[in-house]
Amino acid sequence: MAKSSVYVENTVVSYLTGRPSRNIVAAAWQEITRDWWALRRQHFTLFSVCRVGSTILGCNH
Image (spheres, rainbow, N blue to C red):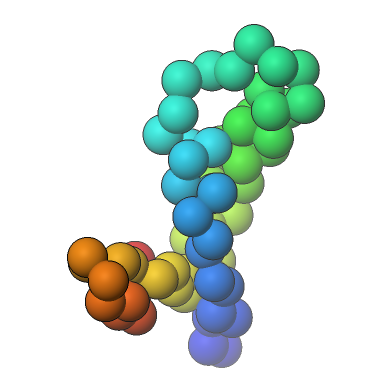
């Protein structure tokens, strides 16, 4: 069975890589995102948009 494709928006990357937030809502989104990334990402083919200067490129991850 083929994996479903998921577009990974830039906010997801910031939640994964950012320092833990003191804002309770942002901290909750960070935790939810990290949990999903750890437990579910392997079930999907992930895509995002990469920007190089003013050029937007489709990137696979």
